Length: 400
Image (cartoon, rainbow, N blue to C red; front, side, top):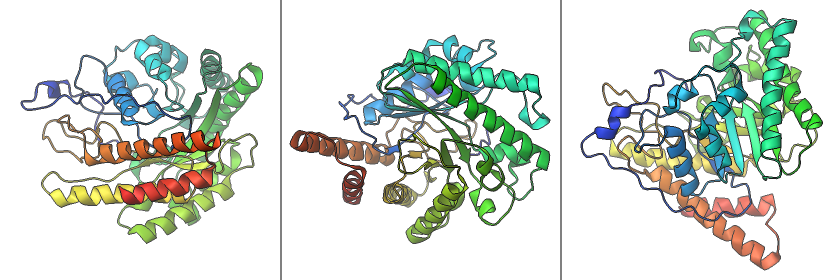
């Protein structure tokens, strides 16, 4: 989401009178399958234990029943998670600078998404010369190679991408501006370098039963569909990218179920037409929802009912459209004014330590779908195909 506030952990929330400490549910044994629906542990102004906000969110995500983890390894991530801040020059150095990053990667998540930008101090908007190109390439190649070696034969799939790319391209969060041609050119080069580094790491590093893919995240796709300058229209066709993530708020706000279904259908069909063909991608579609979510108001109880229903609608649409992932924003809330106490109430576990209805919606979905997979495999000695799984998932969501 658009980050209006600085990421400063609200440690004093630990001492708010009446606040509860959310218990970790018992980790369920999960079937080795893509459940499609997930959440993320990016920000959060609060935590409840002596462990970092990163560890807490990862533990709650896994205990909820998800095998998908999404975190950030961007420059400010230590500050976001309340980790020691150390001087590092590359993403790999950052990853190894604090054991908590590796601790969550070592947990039994099947799919791990992470925001990776650059810690090299190179600013792509100013242009990328030959020397800088090599530095950026080496940083991504080094990290991808490390993951392939460290998690060889782990069954994990790593997704390396960026935060809402159109906000990086559009100055001042101004969706109506036209990004300069030089910025479009420089961002294209930046994405091309990242993709080539990951492709080369996979080619040159011996590995099995572990995968890494690079995704570009967009958030102003409707501009491209109107022929205006944005990543989808002007950059995506020039990058041999693996996957595309869509931070979907522009498409899901102030629309009913039918309107959201049509808008998202049109957007993902458009994005697929913008992609270069690419082999060896293990998903039927190469486009997914990287962020979605709805706000609620603590003073308007009915808003939470609406939020619950709208969230379930996006889950249903994602499954019906055969998207590989749809990731809800998020486990802990970063849309929170610590001074005023005002919250947009978007989290699965809120500032008071309460598990929300959205937490239990996800948990119930995972529990029912995991039981279905276990039963199907016991009966047929294999997992159901994607169509059968999604049909069952839609049936389950309708009942929740």
